[in-house]
Image (cartoon, rainbow, N blue to C red; front, side, top):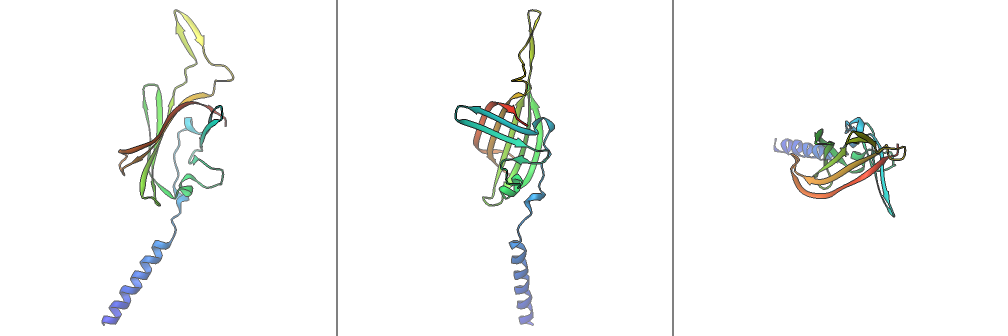
Amino acid sequence: MKRIVLLLIALLAVGCSKSEDKQEDFSQYKLNVPEWLVGEWKYSTGFITHDFGFSKNDYLLSGNGKSFFEDFWSRLVKEGEYSYMDYKGYYFISYATQTKKYFKYSFEMKEKKCSFEFNGTIYNLCNEENKNDRDIRRIYEEVTEYGTTIKKIYDDEYTYKKVK
């Protein structure tokens, strides 16, 4: 009887370790990116270029055909939209399975105002060259499971041009 119980425990342990060895399908995680952020964005000055992009359901960082979550072996935890003053924002929180840390990616876009009125005269600031330019702030931080900031890793705001 003791042998049977030990054998069952051993089989159960082997079965559990086999299921842990199975690699997770990270391609199952999809974002719900707002339409105003979908596209490829680029900022260049001198020798420095910052660019990023979004499809309707993915953060595009590489051209290797893999999703963001496949590239970084991470899970989507939470995502959402918000707005304040002249900005609209989108964020998502992912759990990196390799480092066992949570990261929050935020993108804030300032509303483009092409014209303004001063002393009864309307001035137009937009032309063909700059009509697709947007001020975008990108924030990348390590956070808790609930989104509370532990450490800000990256925070910049540039005028990006929508290239696609």
